[in-house]
Image 1: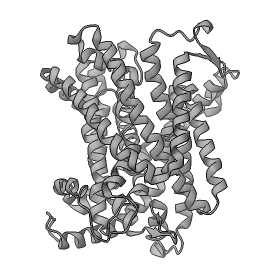
Image 2 (image 1 turned 45 degrees about the vertical axis):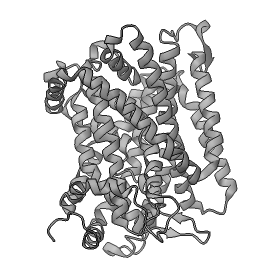
Image 3 (image 1 turned 120 degrees about the vertical axis):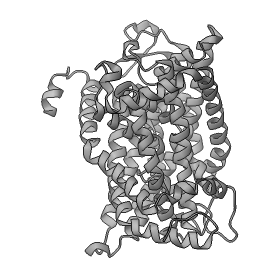
Image 4 (image 1 turned 90 degrees about the vertical axis):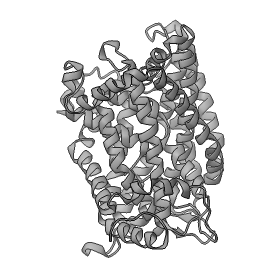
Length: 502
Protein backbone atom coordinates (compact mmCIF):
# COMPACT_ATOMS: atom_id res chain seq x y z
CA UNK A 1 0.00 0.00 0.00
CA UNK A 2 2.82 2.37 0.91
CA UNK A 3 4.73 1.65 -2.32
CA UNK A 4 1.66 2.25 -4.47
CA UNK A 5 1.00 5.58 -2.75
CA UNK A 6 4.62 6.62 -3.30
CA UNK A 7 4.53 5.62 -6.97
CA UNK A 8 1.65 8.01 -7.50
CA UNK A 9 3.97 10.89 -6.65
CA UNK A 10 6.40 12.45 -9.08
CA UNK A 11 9.64 10.67 -8.18
CA UNK A 12 11.68 13.70 -9.23
CA UNK A 13 10.32 15.63 -6.29
CA UNK A 14 12.16 13.98 -3.39
CA UNK A 15 10.51 16.23 -0.81
CA UNK A 16 7.04 15.21 -1.93
CA UNK A 17 8.00 11.54 -1.88
CA UNK A 18 9.51 11.85 1.60
CA UNK A 19 6.42 13.69 2.84
CA UNK A 20 4.21 10.90 1.54
CA UNK A 21 6.25 8.31 3.41
CA UNK A 22 6.22 10.31 6.65
CA UNK A 23 2.44 10.82 6.43
CA UNK A 24 1.92 7.09 6.04
CA UNK A 25 4.19 6.18 8.96
CA UNK A 26 2.55 8.90 11.07
CA UNK A 27 -0.91 7.43 10.51
CA UNK A 28 0.39 4.00 11.55
CA UNK A 29 2.20 5.17 14.69
CA UNK A 30 -0.63 7.41 15.86
CA UNK A 31 -3.27 4.72 15.43
CA UNK A 32 -5.69 3.36 17.99
CA UNK A 33 -3.04 1.42 20.00
CA UNK A 34 -0.98 4.48 20.95
CA UNK A 35 -3.99 6.70 21.65
CA UNK A 36 -5.46 3.93 23.82
CA UNK A 37 -2.13 3.44 25.63
CA UNK A 38 -1.82 7.16 26.44
CA UNK A 39 -5.37 7.48 27.72
CA UNK A 40 -5.21 4.15 29.59
CA UNK A 41 -2.02 5.15 31.41
CA UNK A 42 -3.45 8.53 32.43
CA UNK A 43 -6.76 7.05 33.59
CA UNK A 44 -5.01 4.23 35.47
CA UNK A 45 -2.71 6.60 37.35
CA UNK A 46 -5.58 9.02 38.06
CA UNK A 47 -7.61 6.19 39.60
CA UNK A 48 -4.64 4.85 41.57
CA UNK A 49 -3.99 8.34 42.98
CA UNK A 50 -7.75 8.79 43.55
CA UNK A 51 -7.58 12.31 42.11
CA UNK A 52 -5.39 13.36 45.06
CA UNK A 53 -3.03 15.25 42.73
CA UNK A 54 -5.97 17.34 41.49
CA UNK A 55 -7.10 18.13 45.04
CA UNK A 56 -3.58 19.29 45.85
CA UNK A 57 -3.12 21.56 42.84
CA UNK A 58 -2.88 24.63 45.10
CA UNK A 59 -0.19 22.90 47.16
CA UNK A 60 1.61 21.98 43.93
CA UNK A 61 1.89 25.63 42.89
CA UNK A 62 3.09 26.58 46.36
CA UNK A 63 5.86 23.97 46.16
CA UNK A 64 7.40 25.76 43.18
CA UNK A 65 8.72 28.59 45.34
CA UNK A 66 9.48 26.78 48.60
CA UNK A 67 13.06 25.65 48.95
CA UNK A 68 14.08 22.58 50.92
CA UNK A 69 17.11 22.67 53.18
CA UNK A 70 19.95 20.27 52.35
CA UNK A 71 18.13 19.10 49.24
CA UNK A 72 20.03 17.26 46.53
CA UNK A 73 19.92 18.31 42.90
CA UNK A 74 21.34 20.96 40.59
CA UNK A 75 18.62 23.58 40.03
CA UNK A 76 15.64 24.86 42.00
CA UNK A 77 12.27 23.18 41.55
CA UNK A 78 11.07 26.34 39.84
CA UNK A 79 14.13 26.29 37.58
CA UNK A 80 13.51 22.64 36.71
CA UNK A 81 9.87 23.41 35.94
CA UNK A 82 10.86 26.37 33.75
CA UNK A 83 13.36 24.19 31.92
CA UNK A 84 10.56 21.70 31.27
CA UNK A 85 8.14 24.49 30.32
CA UNK A 86 10.73 25.94 27.96
CA UNK A 87 10.48 22.67 26.04
CA UNK A 88 6.68 22.37 26.21
CA UNK A 89 5.38 25.92 25.75
CA UNK A 90 6.10 26.40 22.07
CA UNK A 91 4.58 25.92 18.68
CA UNK A 92 2.15 23.39 20.14
CA UNK A 93 0.29 26.19 21.93
CA UNK A 94 -0.04 28.40 18.87
CA UNK A 95 0.42 26.22 15.79
CA UNK A 96 -0.32 22.76 17.20
CA UNK A 97 -3.77 23.70 18.48
CA UNK A 98 -4.60 25.38 15.18
CA UNK A 99 -3.40 22.34 13.21
CA UNK A 100 -5.45 19.97 15.37
CA UNK A 101 -8.64 22.00 14.93
CA UNK A 102 -7.94 22.60 11.24
CA UNK A 103 -7.70 18.85 10.56
CA UNK A 104 -9.94 17.33 13.23
CA UNK A 105 -12.45 20.13 13.69
CA UNK A 106 -13.34 21.97 16.94
CA UNK A 107 -13.87 18.61 18.68
CA UNK A 108 -10.12 18.05 18.66
CA UNK A 109 -9.85 20.65 21.45
CA UNK A 110 -12.19 18.58 23.63
CA UNK A 111 -10.01 15.49 23.27
CA UNK A 112 -6.93 17.59 23.88
CA UNK A 113 -8.41 18.64 27.23
CA UNK A 114 -9.38 15.07 28.12
CA UNK A 115 -5.86 13.86 27.39
CA UNK A 116 -4.41 16.75 29.43
CA UNK A 117 -6.67 16.13 32.44
CA UNK A 118 -5.55 12.52 32.73
CA UNK A 119 -2.09 13.53 31.56
CA UNK A 120 -1.63 15.49 34.78
CA UNK A 121 -1.46 12.17 36.65
CA UNK A 122 0.99 10.87 34.05
CA UNK A 123 3.21 13.91 34.48
CA UNK A 124 2.98 13.58 38.26
CA UNK A 125 4.19 9.98 38.07
CA UNK A 126 7.02 10.93 35.70
CA UNK A 127 8.33 13.64 38.04
CA UNK A 128 8.04 11.43 41.10
CA UNK A 129 9.87 8.49 39.53
CA UNK A 130 12.56 10.76 38.07
CA UNK A 131 13.61 11.94 41.54
CA UNK A 132 13.19 8.57 43.25
CA UNK A 133 15.46 6.71 40.84
CA UNK A 134 17.96 9.41 39.91
CA UNK A 135 21.70 8.95 40.37
CA UNK A 136 24.43 11.38 41.35
CA UNK A 137 27.63 11.18 39.29
CA UNK A 138 31.09 11.45 40.91
CA UNK A 139 31.35 15.06 39.70
CA UNK A 140 28.09 15.93 41.50
CA UNK A 141 25.90 16.13 38.41
CA UNK A 142 22.50 14.48 38.56
CA UNK A 143 21.55 11.67 36.19
CA UNK A 144 17.87 10.95 35.88
CA UNK A 145 14.90 10.42 33.62
CA UNK A 146 12.93 7.52 32.17
CA UNK A 147 16.06 5.54 31.26
CA UNK A 148 17.00 5.43 34.96
CA UNK A 149 13.57 4.59 36.37
CA UNK A 150 13.18 1.97 33.66
CA UNK A 151 16.56 0.36 34.35
CA UNK A 152 16.61 0.73 38.17
CA UNK A 153 12.91 0.68 38.98
CA UNK A 154 12.01 -2.35 36.90
CA UNK A 155 15.20 -4.32 37.59
CA UNK A 156 14.32 -7.91 38.53
CA UNK A 157 10.60 -7.31 38.31
CA UNK A 158 8.07 -9.43 36.40
CA UNK A 159 10.58 -12.21 35.83
CA UNK A 160 12.95 -10.03 33.80
CA UNK A 161 16.34 -9.44 35.41
CA UNK A 162 17.54 -6.61 33.19
CA UNK A 163 15.33 -3.91 31.65
CA UNK A 164 18.19 -1.85 30.25
CA UNK A 165 17.14 -2.77 26.69
CA UNK A 166 13.89 -0.83 27.15
CA UNK A 167 15.80 2.15 28.56
CA UNK A 168 18.12 2.09 25.55
CA UNK A 169 15.13 2.08 23.18
CA UNK A 170 13.71 5.12 24.97
CA UNK A 171 17.02 6.96 24.79
CA UNK A 172 17.39 6.26 21.05
CA UNK A 173 13.90 7.53 20.29
CA UNK A 174 14.48 10.51 22.58
CA UNK A 175 17.52 11.53 20.55
CA UNK A 176 15.53 11.21 17.31
CA UNK A 177 12.62 13.20 18.76
CA UNK A 178 14.99 15.98 19.74
CA UNK A 179 17.06 16.15 16.61
CA UNK A 180 14.45 15.35 13.95
CA UNK A 181 11.10 16.17 15.48
CA UNK A 182 9.70 18.23 18.32
CA UNK A 183 13.02 19.81 19.28
CA UNK A 184 14.17 21.34 16.02
CA UNK A 185 12.23 21.36 12.76
CA UNK A 186 8.74 22.05 14.14
CA UNK A 187 10.01 24.98 16.17
CA UNK A 188 12.11 26.69 13.51
CA UNK A 189 9.40 26.05 10.91
CA UNK A 190 6.85 27.73 13.17
CA UNK A 191 9.08 30.78 13.61
CA UNK A 192 9.85 31.22 9.91
CA UNK A 193 6.19 30.66 8.93
CA UNK A 194 5.15 33.51 11.23
CA UNK A 195 7.96 35.68 9.89
CA UNK A 196 6.87 35.03 6.30
CA UNK A 197 3.25 35.85 7.10
CA UNK A 198 4.27 39.14 8.67
CA UNK A 199 6.83 40.34 6.13
CA UNK A 200 5.70 38.54 2.95
CA UNK A 201 2.00 37.64 3.31
CA UNK A 202 1.42 37.72 -0.47
CA UNK A 203 4.55 35.75 -1.38
CA UNK A 204 4.15 33.62 -4.54
CA UNK A 205 6.47 30.54 -4.54
CA UNK A 206 5.95 30.10 -8.29
CA UNK A 207 7.65 33.45 -8.95
CA UNK A 208 11.38 32.73 -8.85
CA UNK A 209 12.21 36.43 -8.99
CA UNK A 210 10.38 37.11 -5.74
CA UNK A 211 12.74 35.13 -3.55
CA UNK A 212 15.71 32.77 -3.37
CA UNK A 213 15.69 29.23 -4.74
CA UNK A 214 16.92 26.57 -2.31
CA UNK A 215 16.46 22.80 -2.61
CA UNK A 216 14.43 23.34 -5.76
CA UNK A 217 11.87 25.63 -4.09
CA UNK A 218 11.56 29.42 -3.95
CA UNK A 219 11.60 31.00 -0.47
CA UNK A 220 11.24 34.66 0.55
CA UNK A 221 14.36 36.37 1.84
CA UNK A 222 12.68 36.92 5.23
CA UNK A 223 12.43 33.16 5.82
CA UNK A 224 16.10 32.60 4.98
CA UNK A 225 17.26 35.49 7.15
CA UNK A 226 15.11 34.40 10.09
CA UNK A 227 16.34 30.83 9.75
CA UNK A 228 19.97 31.91 9.77
CA UNK A 229 19.50 34.22 12.78
CA UNK A 230 17.74 31.58 14.88
CA UNK A 231 20.30 28.96 13.89
CA UNK A 232 23.16 31.22 14.98
CA UNK A 233 21.49 32.02 18.31
CA UNK A 234 20.87 28.34 18.99
CA UNK A 235 24.48 27.57 18.20
CA UNK A 236 25.65 30.20 20.70
CA UNK A 237 23.33 29.25 23.58
CA UNK A 238 23.37 25.43 23.68
CA UNK A 239 26.99 25.33 24.78
CA UNK A 240 25.83 26.77 28.12
CA UNK A 241 24.30 23.51 29.38
CA UNK A 242 21.45 23.03 31.84
CA UNK A 243 22.24 25.88 34.25
CA UNK A 244 22.41 28.37 31.39
CA UNK A 245 19.13 27.11 29.96
CA UNK A 246 17.48 27.14 33.39
CA UNK A 247 18.61 30.71 34.12
CA UNK A 248 17.38 31.98 30.75
CA UNK A 249 14.12 30.02 30.97
CA UNK A 250 13.36 31.24 34.49
CA UNK A 251 13.12 34.78 33.09
CA UNK A 252 11.83 34.23 29.56
CA UNK A 253 9.20 31.52 30.07
CA UNK A 254 7.05 33.30 32.70
CA UNK A 255 7.27 36.59 30.77
CA UNK A 256 6.26 35.14 27.41
CA UNK A 257 3.56 32.89 28.89
CA UNK A 258 1.95 35.72 30.89
CA UNK A 259 2.07 38.10 27.90
CA UNK A 260 0.44 35.58 25.59
CA UNK A 261 -2.23 34.66 28.15
CA UNK A 262 -3.10 38.31 28.80
CA UNK A 263 -3.47 39.15 25.11
CA UNK A 264 -5.57 36.11 24.30
CA UNK A 265 -7.63 36.69 27.47
CA UNK A 266 -8.38 40.18 26.16
CA UNK A 267 -9.45 38.67 22.84
CA UNK A 268 -11.85 36.30 24.60
CA UNK A 269 -13.26 39.10 26.76
CA UNK A 270 -13.93 41.14 23.61
CA UNK A 271 -15.88 38.17 22.24
CA UNK A 272 -17.31 36.88 25.51
CA UNK A 273 -20.89 36.57 24.24
CA UNK A 274 -19.74 33.98 21.68
CA UNK A 275 -17.97 31.70 24.16
CA UNK A 276 -21.03 29.63 25.29
CA UNK A 277 -21.85 28.77 21.67
CA UNK A 278 -18.19 27.95 21.00
CA UNK A 279 -18.11 25.51 23.94
CA UNK A 280 -21.26 23.83 22.62
CA UNK A 281 -19.66 23.50 19.18
CA UNK A 282 -16.49 21.98 20.67
CA UNK A 283 -18.38 19.36 22.69
CA UNK A 284 -20.75 18.41 19.86
CA UNK A 285 -17.93 18.23 17.34
CA UNK A 286 -15.96 15.91 19.63
CA UNK A 287 -18.52 13.14 19.11
CA UNK A 288 -20.15 14.10 15.81
CA UNK A 289 -17.84 16.35 13.74
CA UNK A 290 -20.02 16.16 10.63
CA UNK A 291 -22.87 17.79 12.52
CA UNK A 292 -20.74 20.91 12.90
CA UNK A 293 -18.59 20.82 9.78
CA UNK A 294 -21.09 19.39 7.33
CA UNK A 295 -18.69 16.52 6.62
CA UNK A 296 -15.92 18.90 5.56
CA UNK A 297 -13.62 17.94 8.44
CA UNK A 298 -12.62 14.49 9.66
CA UNK A 299 -14.47 12.04 11.88
CA UNK A 300 -14.70 11.40 15.61
CA UNK A 301 -11.54 9.27 15.45
CA UNK A 302 -9.67 11.96 13.51
CA UNK A 303 -10.77 14.57 16.08
CA UNK A 304 -9.57 12.30 18.88
CA UNK A 305 -6.34 11.47 17.07
CA UNK A 306 -5.50 15.11 16.39
CA UNK A 307 -6.51 16.24 19.88
CA UNK A 308 -4.45 13.61 21.70
CA UNK A 309 -1.45 13.84 19.33
CA UNK A 310 -1.25 17.63 19.41
CA UNK A 311 -1.98 17.66 23.14
CA UNK A 312 0.95 15.32 23.80
CA UNK A 313 3.08 17.40 21.43
CA UNK A 314 2.27 20.46 23.51
CA UNK A 315 2.40 19.22 27.13
CA UNK A 316 4.56 16.09 26.58
CA UNK A 317 2.71 14.11 29.28
CA UNK A 318 3.74 10.49 28.80
CA UNK A 319 6.59 11.32 26.44
CA UNK A 320 9.21 11.03 29.15
CA UNK A 321 10.94 14.32 28.38
CA UNK A 322 9.96 16.39 31.42
CA UNK A 323 11.36 13.84 33.95
CA UNK A 324 14.83 14.45 32.50
CA UNK A 325 14.66 18.04 33.76
CA UNK A 326 12.71 17.10 36.90
CA UNK A 327 15.49 14.75 38.02
CA UNK A 328 17.82 17.74 38.44
CA UNK A 329 15.48 19.57 40.85
CA UNK A 330 16.75 20.42 44.34
CA UNK A 331 14.42 18.27 46.42
CA UNK A 332 14.50 15.13 48.51
CA UNK A 333 10.77 14.48 48.09
CA UNK A 334 9.86 12.61 44.87
CA UNK A 335 6.13 13.27 45.34
CA UNK A 336 6.74 16.99 45.80
CA UNK A 337 8.56 17.15 42.47
CA UNK A 338 5.76 15.11 40.91
CA UNK A 339 3.28 17.78 41.97
CA UNK A 340 5.46 20.58 40.61
CA UNK A 341 5.95 18.67 37.36
CA UNK A 342 2.18 18.21 37.01
CA UNK A 343 1.57 21.96 37.02
CA UNK A 344 3.39 22.14 33.67
CA UNK A 345 0.59 20.21 31.97
CA UNK A 346 -2.01 22.38 33.68
CA UNK A 347 -0.34 25.62 32.57
CA UNK A 348 0.50 24.42 29.07
CA UNK A 349 -2.72 22.73 27.99
CA UNK A 350 -5.54 23.39 30.45
CA UNK A 351 -4.77 27.12 30.37
CA UNK A 352 -2.81 28.19 27.29
CA UNK A 353 -3.99 25.64 24.70
CA UNK A 354 -7.60 25.99 25.84
CA UNK A 355 -7.50 29.75 25.42
CA UNK A 356 -5.93 29.47 21.96
CA UNK A 357 -8.49 26.86 20.89
CA UNK A 358 -11.39 28.94 22.20
CA UNK A 359 -10.13 31.98 20.31
CA UNK A 360 -9.98 29.96 17.07
CA UNK A 361 -13.50 28.54 17.49
CA UNK A 362 -15.06 31.78 18.77
CA UNK A 363 -13.82 33.73 15.76
CA UNK A 364 -14.56 30.99 13.22
CA UNK A 365 -10.96 31.04 11.97
CA UNK A 366 -10.99 27.22 11.78
CA UNK A 367 -13.68 27.00 9.10
CA UNK A 368 -12.55 24.84 6.12
CA UNK A 369 -13.84 27.37 3.61
CA UNK A 370 -11.01 29.73 4.60
CA UNK A 371 -8.44 27.13 3.49
CA UNK A 372 -5.95 28.16 6.17
CA UNK A 373 -3.28 26.00 7.78
CA UNK A 374 -1.07 26.06 10.87
CA UNK A 375 -0.14 29.42 12.31
CA UNK A 376 -2.26 31.23 9.71
CA UNK A 377 -5.38 29.91 11.48
CA UNK A 378 -4.26 31.47 14.76
CA UNK A 379 -3.31 34.73 13.04
CA UNK A 380 -6.75 34.86 11.42
CA UNK A 381 -8.34 34.31 14.84
CA UNK A 382 -6.41 37.27 16.23
CA UNK A 383 -7.31 39.41 13.20
CA UNK A 384 -11.00 38.68 13.67
CA UNK A 385 -10.91 38.86 17.46
CA UNK A 386 -9.38 42.32 17.41
CA UNK A 387 -11.29 43.54 14.35
CA UNK A 388 -12.50 46.53 16.36
CA UNK A 389 -8.95 47.88 16.02
CA UNK A 390 -9.49 48.29 12.27
CA UNK A 391 -6.59 47.84 9.87
CA UNK A 392 -4.15 47.97 12.80
CA UNK A 393 -5.40 44.57 13.98
CA UNK A 394 -3.56 42.73 11.19
CA UNK A 395 -0.25 44.40 11.93
CA UNK A 396 -0.69 43.86 15.65
CA UNK A 397 -1.73 40.20 15.30
CA UNK A 398 1.08 39.32 12.94
CA UNK A 399 3.74 41.12 14.98
CA UNK A 400 2.60 39.79 18.36
CA UNK A 401 2.25 36.17 17.23
CA UNK A 402 5.56 36.30 15.39
CA UNK A 403 7.23 37.57 18.57
CA UNK A 404 5.45 35.12 20.90
CA UNK A 405 6.09 32.18 18.60
CA UNK A 406 9.75 33.12 18.32
CA UNK A 407 10.15 33.18 22.11
CA UNK A 408 8.16 29.98 22.62
CA UNK A 409 9.88 28.03 19.87
CA UNK A 410 13.38 29.25 20.68
CA UNK A 411 13.21 28.13 24.31
CA UNK A 412 11.74 24.80 23.17
CA UNK A 413 14.75 24.26 20.91
CA UNK A 414 17.04 24.91 23.88
CA UNK A 415 15.10 22.65 26.24
CA UNK A 416 15.04 19.76 23.80
CA UNK A 417 18.76 20.06 23.17
CA UNK A 418 19.23 19.38 26.88
CA UNK A 419 16.79 16.45 26.80
CA UNK A 420 18.35 14.80 23.77
CA UNK A 421 21.88 15.26 25.11
CA UNK A 422 20.87 13.52 28.32
CA UNK A 423 19.56 10.63 26.21
CA UNK A 424 22.89 10.56 24.39
CA UNK A 425 24.78 10.71 27.69
CA UNK A 426 22.90 7.65 28.91
CA UNK A 427 23.99 5.71 25.82
CA UNK A 428 27.66 6.76 25.52
CA UNK A 429 28.55 8.19 28.93
CA UNK A 430 29.75 11.68 29.74
CA UNK A 431 33.46 11.22 29.07
CA UNK A 432 33.37 11.48 25.30
CA UNK A 433 33.18 15.23 24.62
CA UNK A 434 33.89 14.83 20.90
CA UNK A 435 30.64 12.90 20.47
CA UNK A 436 28.66 15.70 22.12
CA UNK A 437 30.40 18.35 20.03
CA UNK A 438 29.51 16.46 16.86
CA UNK A 439 25.95 16.00 18.09
CA UNK A 440 25.55 19.72 18.78
CA UNK A 441 26.81 20.57 15.32
CA UNK A 442 24.26 18.16 13.81
CA UNK A 443 21.52 19.60 16.04
CA UNK A 444 22.25 23.13 14.88
CA UNK A 445 22.43 21.96 11.24
CA UNK A 446 18.96 20.39 11.51
CA UNK A 447 17.63 23.68 12.89
CA UNK A 448 19.04 25.39 9.81
CA UNK A 449 17.31 22.93 7.42
CA UNK A 450 13.93 23.01 9.23
CA UNK A 451 12.37 26.00 7.43
CA UNK A 452 12.69 24.32 4.04
CA UNK A 453 10.59 21.20 4.75
CA UNK A 454 6.86 20.93 4.05
CA UNK A 455 4.35 21.57 6.85
CA UNK A 456 3.05 18.01 6.55
CA UNK A 457 6.54 16.50 6.86
CA UNK A 458 7.45 18.73 9.80
CA UNK A 459 4.44 17.72 11.89
CA UNK A 460 4.53 14.14 10.64
CA UNK A 461 8.11 13.62 11.80
CA UNK A 462 7.32 15.18 15.17
CA UNK A 463 4.31 12.91 15.67
CA UNK A 464 6.22 9.77 14.64
CA UNK A 465 9.14 10.28 17.00
CA UNK A 466 6.88 11.50 19.82
CA UNK A 467 4.86 8.33 19.53
CA UNK A 468 7.87 6.02 19.39
CA UNK A 469 9.42 7.77 22.39
CA UNK A 470 6.19 7.43 24.40
CA UNK A 471 5.79 3.64 24.09
CA UNK A 472 8.68 2.50 26.36
CA UNK A 473 7.92 5.27 28.87
CA UNK A 474 4.23 4.34 29.11
CA UNK A 475 5.16 0.69 29.73
CA UNK A 476 7.39 1.75 32.63
CA UNK A 477 4.76 4.08 34.12
CA UNK A 478 2.13 1.33 34.16
CA UNK A 479 4.49 -1.25 35.68
CA UNK A 480 5.76 1.22 38.30
CA UNK A 481 2.32 2.59 39.22
CA UNK A 482 2.34 0.72 42.60
CA UNK A 483 5.59 2.55 43.46
CA UNK A 484 3.93 5.87 42.60
CA UNK A 485 1.10 5.15 45.01
CA UNK A 486 3.38 4.03 47.86
CA UNK A 487 5.62 7.09 47.60
CA UNK A 488 2.55 9.34 47.42
CA UNK A 489 1.07 7.81 50.59
CA UNK A 490 4.31 8.36 52.48
CA UNK A 491 4.42 12.00 51.37
CA UNK A 492 0.83 12.63 52.50
CA UNK A 493 1.59 11.16 55.92
CA UNK A 494 4.43 13.63 56.42
CA UNK A 495 2.72 16.74 55.03
CA UNK A 496 -0.45 18.57 55.97
CA UNK A 497 -2.09 18.18 52.59
CA UNK A 498 -5.31 16.63 51.36
CA UNK A 499 -5.10 12.92 50.84
CA UNK A 500 -7.45 10.13 49.79
CA UNK A 501 -8.65 7.52 52.23
CA UNK A 502 -6.03 4.80 52.64
